[in-house]
Figure 1: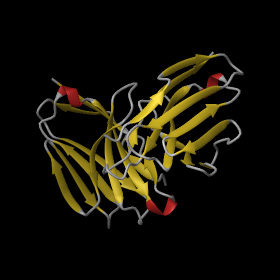
Figure 2: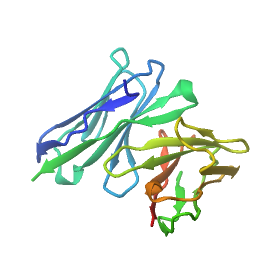
Figure 3: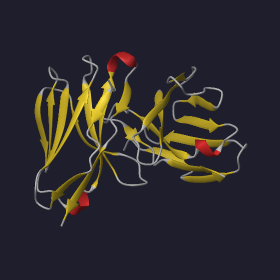
Figure 4: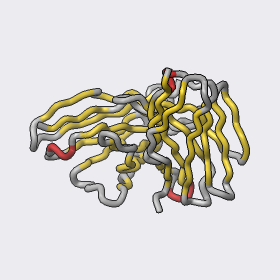
Amino acid sequence: QKEVEQNSGPLSVPEGAIASLNCTYSDRGSQSFFWYRQYSGKSPELIMSIYSNGDKEDGRFTAQLNKASQYVSLLIRDSQPSDSATYLCAVNFYNQGGKLIFGQGTELSVKP
Amino acid sequence: GAVVSQHPSRVICKSGTSVKIECRSLDFQATTMFWYRQFPKQSLMLMATSNEGSKATYEQGVEKDKFLINHASLTLSTLTVTSAHPEDSSFYICSARPKEVGGYTFGSGTRLTVV
């Protein structure tokens, strides 16, 4: 089992729709979870961080965390073409010296 | 705030030569720096964890004699790719976790091409 797993996509949604991105992780001791957006050829940029079970909202983005199911998701409401990018789920493996481990990324395409 | 400056952004080198990549924390102290490598269409793979004043910790399968990491100060970590070969061509990115930021800050990355 991969440490952090995402559907690689590509995920295609029409403009204005909700994009749903999912991620599972293997380390039950993990405490910190992050969603990054990466455009081609660029470094990742942080979108959301979440540490507690439940939902966390920031503008059009909502992160959801369920530690019992070892599951974290990202919802993007009112998707825009500029949201087209690869979205990376990252988990802080606390018991491994704080390493940040990435999933393989989900490519999102928002069609006008 | 909490900026990680990475240089160079792009480098082309001949096979067999060495290349040094620098990452500096500009407005915070980075006791730990993480080095990642990313091949096209793939995710970031952690190569090693760099600790100020001590030896780096390498991930399984990463050759420590080939990828030399030095973290001599609280603001500077370097990765040297020694005897580079075309298969080392990749996007190398460093990262730190400033206390002031709720996540990890990344450098802008270095595109290495070995010809």
